[in-house]
Each structure stands twice: as C-alpha cells, then as structure tokens.
Amino acid sequence: MAPGTNEDAQEKDRADVTPPPEGEDRPDRTDRPRERPESPRARMLRLGACAVAIAVAMTAGAVVLGNKDDDVRTVASAPGVAPELLATGSLASSISALQTHLKAQPKDYGGWSTLGVAYIEQARTNGDPSRYPQAERALERSLKLKPDNDPALAGRSALAAARHDFPDALRYADKALDENAYNERALSTRIDALVELGRYKEASKAADQADARRPGIPVFTRYAYVRELRGDVTTTRRVLKQALAGASTPGDIAYVATALGQLSWREGEYKTALTYFEQALRADKVYLPALEGRARAQAANGDRKAAIAGMEDVVARFPLPGPLVVLGELYEARGGEEDKAKARAQYALVNAWTALARANGVNADLDTALAAADHGDRKAALRAARAEWDRRETVHTADALAWALHVNGRDDEALPYARRATATGYRDATFLYHRGMIEQATGNKKEARGSLSAALKLNPGFSPVGAKLAEKTLTALGGAK
Image 1 (cartoon, rainbow, N blue to C red):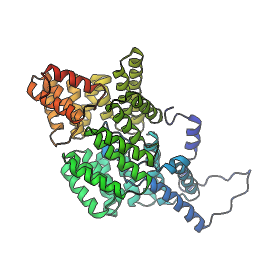
Image 2 (cartoon, rainbow, N blue to C red):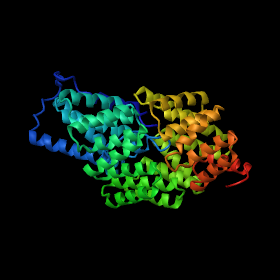
Image 3 (cartoon, rainbow, N blue to C red):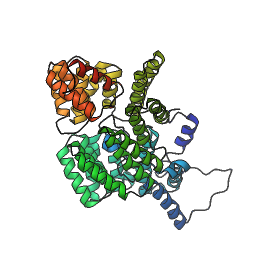
Image 4 (cartoon, helix red, strand yellow):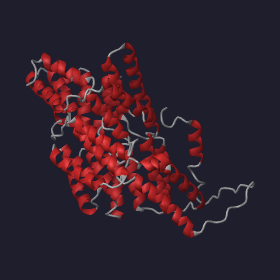
C-alpha cells in the first residue's frame, strides 16, 4: 500500500499536528481531572530524549526527498533513520511527544524548529511530501517566536531543498550561517544548493569550508560527491571509505555504505555494489536507497527475478519516480503482454506522485521530464525540461533537456546540451548513452560509437531498456569503438 493512504491514521496524526495559535489555550477536558503541571526537570528530560532520537535520525544534516534518477543525489543522500527508530516508531513517538509539549508550551521556539526538521525527515522516510506544509508551519512558528534562530533557518534551508527550491535553500543556509557559522545542517545544505544550481566551483569551495568547520559524515559525503562531479572517482571512493570506517550509528553506516554501493554500481562493479548494499541493510533493513540500489545491482548482474521482487517491495513502501520507472522497465524487459501492462501501470503512478508533490510545494519538473521522455507525454517532458533548465543549469538538467529534445525529434538542438552534460567529467552511463543516441541521430557516427561504447563499458546494466537499445544501435554502427 502506498505510504500515507491509511486515512484513519493520517487523520489522527493531523489532528495532533497543530497546537492552538499563540496566545490561545486549548480548553481543558471536563471529563477528566486536570493534569499536574510537569516539573521543569521532567520536561527537559523528556524533550532531551526527543531531541536525541530525532538527532540520531538526522545525522546527515540537510534531509530531503529524492532519488538517484534525478539530480538531487546530494540532497537525497541523507542517512536513513536508525533501524531501532523505525522498528519501535521512535521518530513518530518523538514527534508526538513534541506535539504534546508544544500544546502546553507554545512559545518554545527550539521545540518548533526541532518539530519542523522532524517532519522533513518523516517526509523523506515515508516518501510523503504532504509533511512539508506541516514542516513549514512549525519552522515559521519558531522564527516568529525568535527571529533569526539558526536551527529554524537551517530547517527552512533543508525544507526548500526538499522542495527543489535551491535558490531559497541557499538563501536560508546563508542566513543560518550568518547566525552560527558552524551549523552543520546549514553547511551541508549550502553545498547541496550550490551543486543543484550548477555552481560547481562554489560548491567545491563550500565543501572545503564545511570540512574545515564541521568535519563529519554529512560533510564528508558531500565533499565526495563534489569531487565525483568533476570525474575524480578515486578521491570520492577514498573519502567515502574513510567515512564508512568512522561511522558508528546504524543510520550513518547505512547511508555511507549505500553511497559506496551506488558509486560501485555506476562504475559497473556490481558484486562490490551488492556487498555494500548488504552492509547497509544489515545496519538498517528498511533503508530505501539501499533496497533500491540492491535491486538495480541485481538486475545489472543478471538476477532479474530478485531485482523485480526487490523493486516491487521498494515501490510498495515508497512509490517514488525513480523506483517506479526502474520497475516498469524491468517488466518491459521481461517482454510479456501482462508485463507490458504492469509497466504502464508503474509509469502512470509517476504522474500521481508528481501531482502529490506539486500540491505540497515540490518542484517536480525534472522528475516529469525524465519519466515522461521515455514513458509518457514527450511534449510535456520537453516543457518540464525547459522549465527546469531555466531555473538551474546543471549536468543533470542539461542531460534531461537534451533527451527531451531528442525524443521530440529536435536532435540538432539537443546535441549541445548532451555535450554539456558530459563536460565536467562526471561518469554516468545514462548521460553517455543519451549523448551517443543524439550523435547517431545527427549523423556523427564516429562520436556515437565512442559514446555508446563508453556507456556500455562503464556500466553495461545502467538501464533494463536503455542498455538493450544502446547495444542494438552500437551494432548497427559497426560495433564497439
């Protein structure tokens, strides 16, 4: 069942979300005795426990919704909730305790900021963007009570990044750092925002600055990704391995091991990738990126049955665009009429997620462009890709626009964007595949052979459908270069 579809549970949860406006007291129940006021010491102990539980779940700093199929990899790569929190419902329990506290103490600005960040984490772990408006209200309440408090500003930065509003994410991160130059969440989200705006040189400087101020796993992983965008896989791998060696909490272990698994998968090292994903899942058995990564690696390694079962489990828990498209392509690759119908159903769910995301303030144009170009409305894909490119010029938006132009038959326009997508040295087989197909369509056969050969050499299992088409096209061009 898709997350967030249990209406009774949602209604109960929402009924407890928002305490009365400031200055208004909720009327006492007349059918029970008035509760004894909580002592300051007891309240501090209880809230301290809530803060610790949420802090454990949030050790990566900025946490947002996303997946590897779009260009929010850095912001999407936050560690999962520790397995004991998921198993016992401690994140939900902590949120409930904070809600109860804030009903009694509505002027606690720190409690409001913590609650807002917890909602962002809950949105990420549940794949439910409906939590974002709740996070926004909580963070705004904190800032109203104490303007410019850096935890709430950093929370607003993380929320903006979650909604793919990266200019606002950068603005709030800078505001938070003006108040506290060592705020880890703000330092981390600032790197994310610069990356997602295509300002890679500035992102590199921001990563160096963050490393000097707050070295740790949230910063190390972002530092590694900035290096990977420049093609420096050796440094990326070294930094991630060092981070994994220093990881101690289950959430951090799952996060970093998954990042290493994803890197290994992109490099075509499927057995190594599977080893890292299994390590991540030993730490957190329901960590979504590890479950998704394992299924992708299984598919690339030839175990289609396990891959389909694994991806079905992922989309049953979290029906996000990336996993939905991969599952659809796995069905497509299997080839039966029933499988084709199943594939179409997965692609249709992408539209449902996109509508939900937009209703809750998330910019979903890149998700729309990537999914629709291959499996939906091609004109809509081009509109979305152009809109995203106008907002931010990254290697990922360049690739999305190039491919959307290609599927609409506008290859001469597409080629410069495809070249730009591969210009930084970032090693992604999908980018090379897209470039090769566009080069073939524009008559650049020699270049097409080179790009398609490079894609299949780097990661021959990059896509259940795309890899087959790449092989077929390469054969027609005379084989590998």
